Length: 267
Image 1 (cartoon, helix red, strand yellow):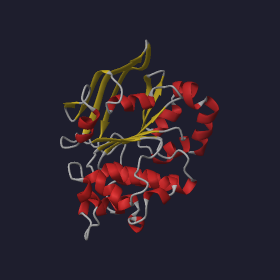
Image 2 (tube, helix red, strand yellow):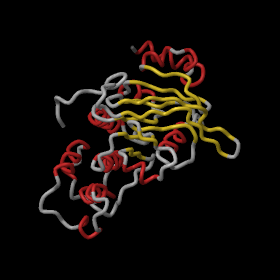
Image 3 (cartoon, helix red, strand yellow):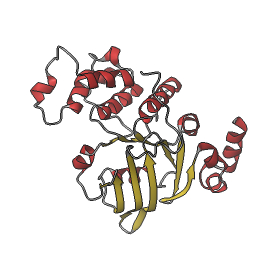
Image 4 (cartoon, one colour):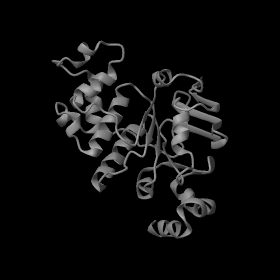
């Protein structure tokens, strides 16, 4: 880990050279039911954005639409390139990566082999699975970033729940993903694992666009630089953690007045 690396900040880096994801009038409809209803979002590099809302608010569906898993209308552009209508693998090649609530790793392969396969699109399976004499620099960096260097030769299947999530994030890093959409990354984790995951998100979030779909409000308060609240498929609030907690509509629709008051008293 590089201790001099900048921290994610509210609003992110809006400089001309930064990556961004722009969502305009995004709509997803299933059999007449509108799951995502005209969402507008602009996400900049360096902004650790949390996406929260009650069950059925459309959070995961929004991520599915951005990554090509469900059809949608509107526009999703990554630094000016339209993503809607493209195949899943083509969207991934633009640098948009996602994780799911259950980590998708090759459990019988080692940590290093998982990263090697993720990094090796286009290479033969034999080439990717051979035992390397040296580790490629970007894979070494990913191992250090996700904190699994000491477990590089262990099968992924024996990793703890949190470590599998970190490995999946590492698999996105070696693919040079600079927009990461993470679906409830700390679900089922211990307190220590949540802390480690939050610190990992800070490390990767300063140089990338990171969106975290989350239900854990304590985790959000501790690590988010900005928050978007969805309800009934629409954005009802957008801003810093403090602004979101003070928003009366958020208190009514999602946090509950008592929870919001308790949160404000903690700060």
